[in-house]
Image 1: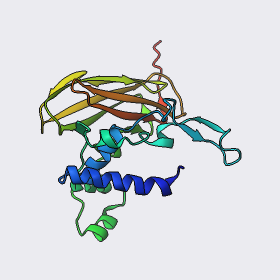
Image 2 (image 1 turned 30 degrees about the vertical axis):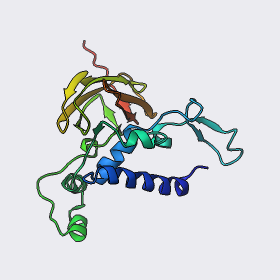
Image 3 (image 1 turned 135 degrees about the vertical axis):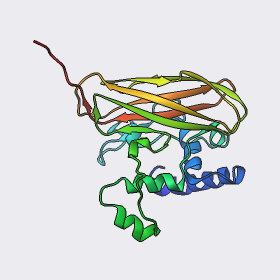
Length: 228
């Protein structure tokens, strides 16, 4: 069975298990553990499928995208040992909300806090995913990882969304327990397209930890320069 009504209690239970093992985890850290360790395949090893119509739903299916399935099917065992997490604080979310035009009065009304000069764009939230709504030639995205396991060396791999190229720096890194590592992701448009496309970044630790970051780009704009 599928759907949000079935997913909600399962995810809530798994979140409780993670919170039991890691009492200091924030909601963002719990979400990161669940997301980065999720499987992109179904129980038979095939791609996760998405229904495309209410009529004959079993016949109207195609491979799911991150907009259909998020990060995939949760893996309870892996989520209890994610290796790396992406974390966000209350202040990060507040900065994001304050960065939305006209939000200052709403933020003040609901939180009692005034928006200062600090504001954060949605793309800069330290989420275990990257989405660019309009890639205007190029963009640079950063993500900060925290190692909650033993010291480990990671290698980084990726597959770029159609119509774009990706480069992640560094491609290899060592991170000790409790330490952080910043990843810089360079994204460039290689063609003009308004169609959403998808890729992913993989983090592969030498102690067996694997983390997957979905990448989504909705529109790509590439200007061709010409000279006389």
